[in-house]
Amino acid sequence: MNVIVGSEGFIGQHYTRCLTNINEDFFRVPTREALLNIISANRELTLGEVSNVIWLAGKTFPFNCTSINNPNYMNDLESLDHFLEFLQGRRWSGRFIFLSSGGCVYASSSNPLSESSELGPNNLYGTLKLEQEKLVIASGIMHSILRVANVFGHKNRIISGQDVISNWISNYKLGNTCEVYGNLDSFRDYINVIDVVRAIMSCSMNSTVNHLLNIGSGEVMQTRELMELFTRHTHGQIKFHFKNSREIDRNGYVLDISHAKKVLGWIPTNSHISDVSDFIVEELRK
Image (cartoon, rainbow, N blue to C red; front, side):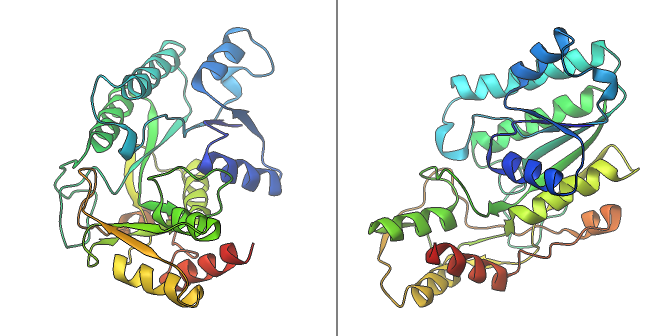
C-alpha cells in the first residue's frame, strides 16, 4: 500500500492518477494531519499495511519564503519532524520517499551537478529542503530522497511566481504580458511531471534504500531558448516584460542524473527540449 501525503498538490494529483490507471493500491491523504488522524483512530488504514509513504506535502515555495520565522517554513519543517517521530515510535519498517529540490540546494555552478556537488542554497527554500533531508536521514527510517529539477506539466491551479512555463502559458491566454527575470543566458533543467511520477514509482518498487538521487532532464535550456519557443508557437504575439533577477533566482543549473539511471533504471522520456516545445503547443491549444 502506498500512502501519498500531499495528494492534492501538483505532483500528488499526477501520481495518484497514474496509480489509478495501473490499479495499484494507494491511500490519498491531503495533509500529514489527515494521515495521523486516520491511523490514530484506526480507521480505514493500519500502519502495518503501508509499504511506502510518499511525502509531497508542503506550503513553502521559493517565492513565499523570506524568513525562517515564516509560518509556512516552520510548519513544513515541524510537520515532517513530528511525522517521522510518529513513524519511529511505531517502528514502521516501510520506505519514506521525500521530494527535495535539485534547483535550490546546490552551490552555483555552470557544470552538471551531481549528488556529491557542493551544497549552497541560494534561498530559504533550499535551506528548508536540506533541513528536511537531514531529518529524514537522522530518523533511521528506510528512505529515498529525490532532488527534483524544475517541474512542468498540466496544472489545475497556476501559482504566480512559480513555474515559468505554466505562468507564461496562462498569462498569454489571458492577454497579459509575460515577465522575464534576469539574464537571457540564464538556464534551467526542466523535467516533465510524468517523468517525476515514474521516478517515484521506480523508487517505491526498488530494493535499494537510503539513497539520494537527482531527478531531472540532464539538459540545459536557456531563458532565451524558452522565449524563442513561445514566440514561435504564438506566431510572435506573446509580449515579454523584462525584470532584474530576484533574490531567489540563480543564473542556472543542470543536474547530473547518471546515478538515478544506474540505481533505478530510470531515464526521463518526456523532458527533452522537444517535449517542452510539444507541451507548450498542447497547452496553448486548450
